[in-house]
Image (tube, rainbow, N blue to C red):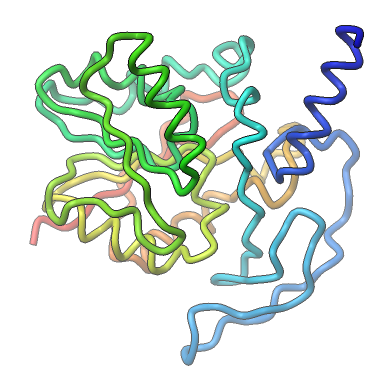
Amino acid sequence: MTKHSLLIALIATVCSSGACVADVTPKPATTTAPATTQASAYEHGPRSPDGIGKYYMGREIAHYMSHLGAPWLDRPEREAEENTQALVDAIELRPTDVVADIGVGTGYYAFRLAPKVPEGKVLGVDIQQEMLDLLTAAAKTRAVTNVEPVLGSTSDPKLPKGAVDVVLMVDSYHEFDHPREMMDAIVSALKPGGRVVLVEFRAEDPAVRIKRLHKMTEAQAVKEMTAAGLRHVETNPVLPQQHLMIFQKPLR
């Protein structure tokens, strides 16, 4: 197999898994989200090619990325494309912080956060054991001892209550098929005053070549985090393609 055909095969695998790979052909929205009623957190409606036909607060939930798309997470050009070091620096972690990386995947961010919390730890949460196996193997290779794998479910990240200082979600929240339950559990896991760092590709920017359902507007993200009881602190403009949004749990 040539190098070119191998790349095409990899992209096809990632696309079939629902990953946020670039969609270079603009497509008009073909579905209208039904209104969410007070009787239920969710509605079901027309299913987009990259969605599951389930809607939360007017937003169709996207397919999650399979472990088969793991190589895309560690692609060499990611730092240049997303300015990932700027994201890590912007979180302003303390050495003793406990950080939960939700949708940790292969640990791309977990291993960049770990040196920032030498007296704390990073809880790497994923719903796929295959991803956690990759994370564990990488931690062993890197001799990193403060990154711990956590097997969560689609409705519960399985985090200890009131024990987490910072929750990081990078390009993962839009794929939660039970976002209300997940956010309830996340808020419960946060210490009073704890922060949620939510990173999502900017849906407002047509130049961001990511599939439509794998992007979020700032307004939609703020609406959903506010519904979970969090306060929007700021949106840091440091990233070239993504919103870097900070939310905080009330002190009491």
